[in-house]
Length: 468
Image (tube, rainbow, N blue to C red; front, side, top):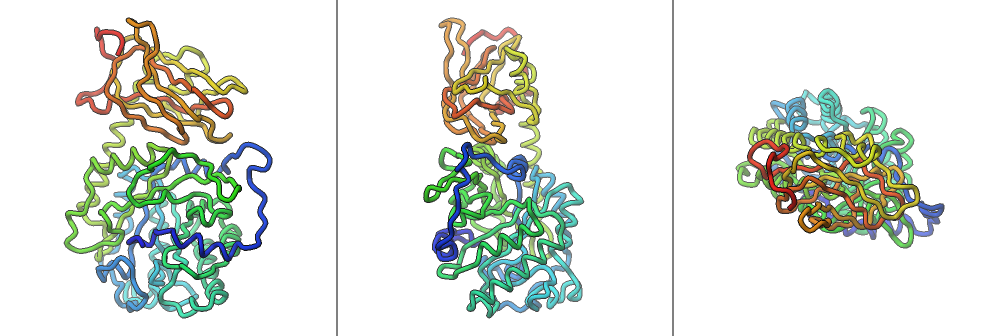
């Protein structure tokens, strides 16, 4: 088990019974597998946060057992605007609120149970955490989504699969109809081993009202999920990341979302927990090993028992956002000149434009030159994924004037949405992206070069010796 309820091991078994006998034609039956438009739009968001805030916050717990009285929930300074300002400053683009965790306590005044905020002293029982957080998120330019735990340790209907499915779908219907567009819906199978859910009906309920919501779930919920769990809570993608994944001969576009908490091992707030806060260097490494490996970063945040994000968390989020912004400003490629008119689209600092290799090609080269040699130690490459993920093997190379040949500084396989490659600093005036192998013509949105280790602002190096 994992502390947040994010262990997915049991999900394979709980959906197996629900999908037994279902005949589904593979998405790839007609050819190349491509994403839905709402999937590529979601991937462009790159970085989101998940908010854990409930009765556990007041009880020093990670997993509640469903016995906490609603009176436990009573934040005295609840301020989702404070949360969203900090989240915006971090560079995140979307927010997922845990509307109901495994203890069954609901953060909105659902008509389906009294075990909710309407039975708490907060706001005199008239409050709605989901509604206030949704409004604050949109006020600060953030997209909003929800997590609704299938496991419920409080409601007695959970013992009756059919009755509980009706209860769960009624709650989902409320969330899907009453809180605007939902960017993401989390399905978490933790704690549900042996329990059979009607996932087909759950997704039908969601899609009735929210056709463009990305459904997050492990590969066990294969036919219905739009994004998949990375496999750990470490904040890293530990494998070559392909957006298309196969299960039992059925392949789908299922990009990865990697979840990890800002506080080490803690998803809910705990008192006297200052040492668990991750450092800026740890957060930057997490970013490079998630977003920088073609995945979404989902960072866990936990408001405290006042209803505020702790001051140290706010400061670290602002520091993180400033560092990401500073790194993004140093793109050297925009000062270079592409060797053809079309490839300039990959050097223009605009992900809405892209370069295409010749039609039908499985190998291509894209080169950029500089008037003076530049020093760089990172490359950021993005594929245009609307027609699928094509690059299978690539190299980043610099021209050696003395040897009169191209020297590789990076070999890689999958690029996907975004790939960040780090290497010892090199100095060169000619750099190229060599697509060694691709399933079809490669399509590159951006090929950017940076000198992130430099203490001073990056730029052309005048009178530097040519070559690496």
